[in-house]
Length: 481
Image (cartoon, rainbow, N blue to C red; front, side, top):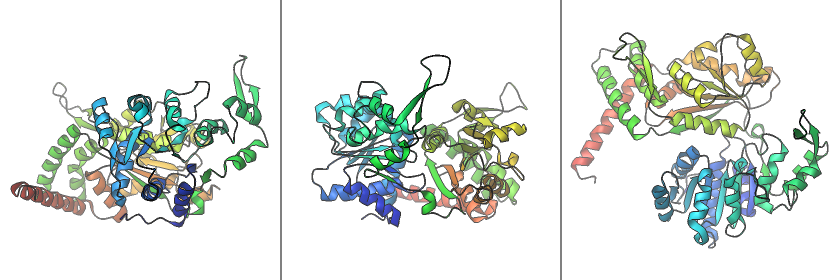
């Protein structure tokens, strides 16, 4: 029996999914749309014998981690497998017979070709459904949406679309998503008819082909009225107080090689703690540096040919991939990203070339507050007292974490609820903590949440890890019973 206890608004989501075979949920981040969807699926699979298997389409990290984690977190009695990785790994996941299969959108053409007439999925969940916005009947648009269109009406009985922002770049984005729900009944049989009905073309450059389509003055309310029966929209501010941030932990798994490196470094650090030589917070925190660096993805070292200097190497990109998902879910809304090490900043700049560093130039802050910077990288120590960043956005993602409570609180306050209210922005603030699972990242979060002393938390973590190793050894000796 699932332990998922839906809030009242989540009960609305569940009812909407159950009563609408094809529907969309425009639900902002942090409101639990994944858990709500799983609860609805569990009910549907129980009461409808015609529904046997579910395909969840999502960005890669979300497909591999978020959906399986949510199934296990709430104890839903549905098996789950991720159709990701090599072709052999994908075929193995398909053959597993799992009730819920998750896949990233990039796998759709392969999946449709691989399964052919043996397509087994009665329900498709399109998480981040804006990935379908490019679909066109004339064969235009993306290959992934075209692949889904081959089975959407012939093989699939139910489609559930999930997104926080269905039209991040304007209402033109809606037609492709709606086609999978009603085949054009509400917004027009073709994209061209939809565009010509609700938009006006305007030249925006010297070229005759440089055309922008502006929504006609009456069109927004008309479109909303047409799709209202299938599309359920929720506003965070209606259900959550905007005087406190909405905290969204995002957990990632270290790849095998990085996990081995982490465990070696952690064991050495814990041995130093156990020696009793570390007695103050500064020294205790110093022992954790390499652990937290590995958790973030890059570690510093001293090159043999350049003694006295430091360099760094990348160990994994798990947090980069997590941040990509956060940025995608933000759907065009600006994101403030907190980092700790310069190696983090270098990797972030490479992964997100559209981002900018918060530097000493006052014009950078002005550009952020004007909405001209989609991603702003800021070190908490440089975003302290006096900086006003609240006009530029409401989303803060912590890429890497450190023990300093004051720095953490200061950067949160830069876009926090008080400043949002003072500036006339009645909107929620979202805090994403990207945490490497089963690492000191989680201990730092306990420090932030409880304000306990660093050395106490580290010694506690040391003791817990030691007990875990002892239990594992005991299990090995007893044959795993």
